[in-house]
Amino acid sequence: MRGVNWLGDAVMTTPALLRLRERFPKAHLVLLSPLKLCDVWRQHPAIDEVIAIEAGESLFSVGRKLREKQFDLALVLPNSPRAALEVWLAKIPQRIGYARPWRNWFLTQAISPRPGHAQMRKRSVVKIKQLAAGNSESRTQNPEFSNSAHQVHEYLHLAAALGANPELLPPQLVVTQEEIEATKKKFGLEKIARPILGLNPGAEYGPAKRWPTLRFVAVADKIQQRTDCVWLILGGKGDVLIANVIENGMRVLTEGRSAKINLAGKTSLRELMALLKSCRVLLTNDTGPMHVAAALGTPVVVPFGSTSPELTGPGLPGDPRHRLLKSDAPCAPCFLRECPIDFRCMTGISVERVVEAVVEASNRHG
Image (cartoon, rainbow, N blue to C red; front, side, top):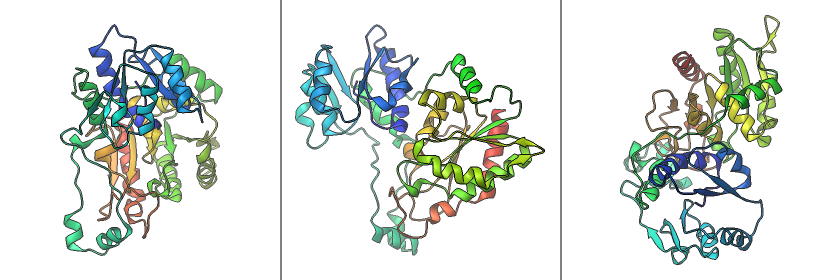
């Protein structure tokens, strides 16, 4: 199987991978994955082996690597021409994936879009301004997505082409208790008896997916006062600046005890997974760690603005453990990286609303 290229997307493929394992219990299932995501698949019950695509590796190199394995069949999960060309160069006899321009010739079976397929179409700046101004004609064209439009169904539909059951399963990742204990010890968390909550303020896709930084600070302080929790500030190397702003903005001590631990940019992917599993709840933007936390059983609270929880929300669609918050901005979702107007989709989600959502999710999980 040719895996996807982004962390959140990888998590959303896990129901399809589990259905394939169910369909082919004795098969040797191998996942071709970007190196940065390979650790996600450690211990995963659907995968027997992972082959890494190195950063910058040519498709000819990838093709040779696959050809040496003499695979019988390839299921291509991404929709890119390159992903289909890689398995074609590997001379794999059966090559199955979605029909898309510039790649169908490389597939032996090009799958048509499934019934219920919904596409994330970026709005034009003109349409956004019309919607924001209350243009009634534009408002009637605003899309409404059902739970059946969720991205997990896209991958399940591909798996069904191989005879797998297309019914929903929750996304699933695995982290061991030994990993959790080792990670807690490494970062000095093993003796903390107070509730541990996670805060993930970044979003790699762009600023339109990021709830305002200072609002994270306000929420963290208010919840800490109510619950005497410890906040873990999490994120990758690209989130360090935002994490530092939040760390510096929060109260330093509560009755002589630290209420925050900033680990952004300091963890491996497996360590991040262990920390997310250890959190009672994760407050996060719509980004990869959101999906990881949900797949590990940790409730998430997410302000959604430019994107749609109906299409790419965490866990199973409609899972009551999670709190997915939206404003009433008529221009959302726009699917843009940056807001061309006043960011009302995110500023319309108040600090108080997020505080209550985090407390509710934490109490339910605790």
